[in-house]
Image (cartoon, rainbow, N blue to C red; front, side):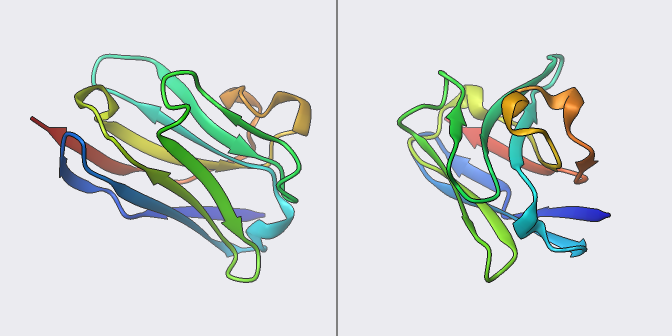
Length: 124
C-alpha cells in the first residue's frame, strides 16, 4: 500500500508559478501510475494531469494543457506538477492519486490511493 503526500501549495498571483510535489510513504510511488486532480470550491473534482509509472503515457486536461507539466523522479520517489501561467480558475485543493490502470488515468474513481490535498490559491 502507498500513501501519497502532497506539498508545495500556497498563495500566488495570477500569472505566477508553483510546483507541487507528491511523495509517498509505505511502498514506493515509482511503481504506480499517478495523477493529479483538483477540487475548486463548490465544484466537482476534476482531472488535471496523469502519467504512467514509466512516463510512457501522459495526459492533461484541456484547461491546463500548455501551462502545467507532470513529471516524476522515480529515484526520489516523487511526482511533480509544475504549474505556470496560473489563472484565478486554478484555485483549488490539489490531490495526488496513485494506482490507476493505465487505460483509465483520467478517471479519479479508479485510483486506489489518495493524498490529503494541498491548497493552491491564485489571486488577482
